[in-house]
Length: 369
Image 1 (cartoon, helix red, strand yellow):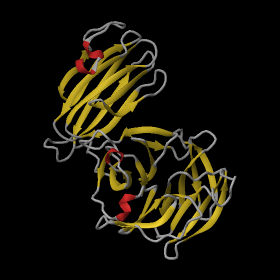
Image 2 (cartoon, rainbow, N blue to C red):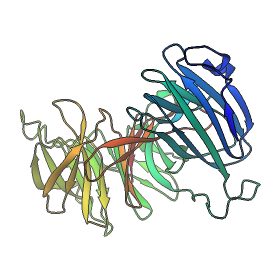
Image 3 (tube, rainbow, N blue to C red):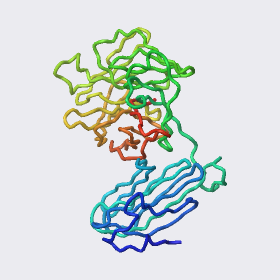
Image 4 (cartoon, helix red, strand yellow):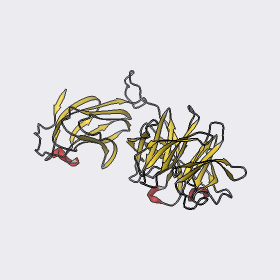
């Protein structure tokens, strides 16, 4: 069934132009379609709906005459968006928990009619029978480090569900939690974190205790840290203190935890290793995010175990706290956004917003493993 959005004509205003007057769809189940219009005199249309349980949510916006964007909100917070250029169709796919949500169709340029389709499929265990042909995705929780609530000093060991963007703060204690964690690396039940350019402090995954270990590495500012599947630990650095005036020459290192040393594998001209480091087991190479000091945007590099490096391309973000490689997809985290990074071109695109349930403040993700 296709519904008209209050029968408006382009340029007229109605109650649904504001969130407080959103068109109430009620409990969303299955697929519903709507027609509407936004334009110069009618910038936005709001729709509200509720979910009774965890569901797979899909949205499509098409039949556009001009540029129109679409946003998915929980209250005032945007949790997903689609902002393609021109008349390209927009789409959002994510998993949502039970609650009330808003869809905002937003005029970007000119006047345009649109066709909006909303679809939900209950997830397994949500209390209703899911579509057997479209099973819900299992949780894909990955370990990350994050700041504390409200900007308090120190860091948390956390996890992120890549399907939903939901961040969970894990029970973490010990002297190491008072430090800012720039990145983390995990092998087995033991992990290490970088803080203020140094490695050596560690945490125990079974207890959540993070401790500060003695560290003799004082002349190199490390930023990225990652294990290989065989347990070898590598890091990246900008080499600032070793090569004064040569900030735009980075380093790739092998870390010797037992002896508290790092051994230079190779210098990488044009590389400023102020970014995360992740390993791709399929290729046996690392991906590294490197901040370009000339324009402030991050670039994606591929680095081999011998230090051979290739610039892939510009990620397109001026802030990138962490990266994760999962099932062939490279994810990045910038502010409270989860992005997908194209490993062929380096370009990053918004995947979904990161949320912390029942909290208005979302701690910044600083490292992943």
